[in-house]
Image (cartoon, rainbow, N blue to C red; front, side, top):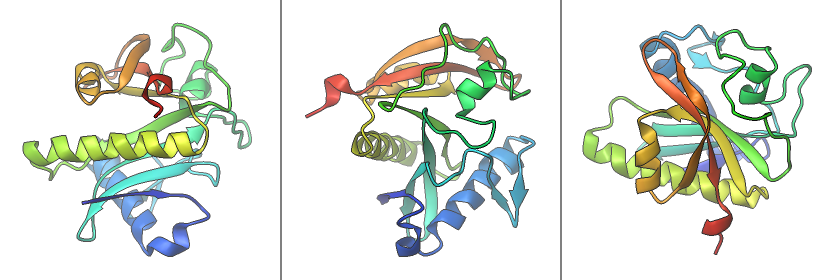
Length: 195
């Protein structure tokens, strides 16, 4: 199993990995979860998939196992910034505005993680290993771009799991009920993990 961080400047070196990631996101979020998201040719994407973002992909034998998108909180594309802030600003109708305890941060040292997934075909034993590899590569990649913390939304029940993986994570907002699942905004502090 391998973890790769993709960016617009290195896509050419990784063959179809980006398209495979977007197809895996489509299977996860559109087909299985039933989310109404933009898609084309069986690939899911949105306004946050820009040259400013990075995509961490865990893959093995030509199959995507997991992924996460990292986006700088300082980035703007038209009216959009990053998902959590845009929700707070009322630009997204699927995420409530009151998801955070405080104003959404905008800083070069803070990046957002979004579209986090592990493929359904991972066994319980594989899932632990895949999660660990995804988190390790996400932290490494975020550090490489100068981040000292990551803001994101995770399933509420994943808080304990994140801590089990050694992440310094704290809730940054209230629990949001999305019907089929409950999520919470979190901040992952990487300052104490810097070596």
